[in-house]
Image (spheres, one colour):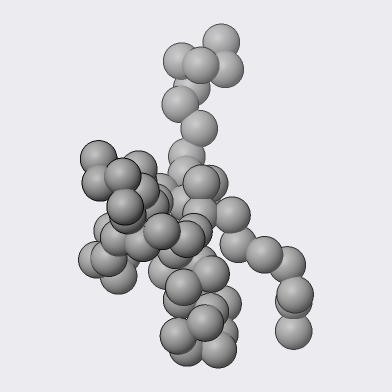
Length: 63
């Protein structure tokens, strides 16, 4: 079992909210939180986030 942390900032479902009290959001599970969403998922379920999907790089930025 991997103990590697999931970096939500690299997930296509992660977003920054306008809510100063709940600045991090997860589109997969539909919640906002003060912590990084993968931490909340792990604390709630005891398992790493199953919804993580890495963002695709914009090819225009690489040229």
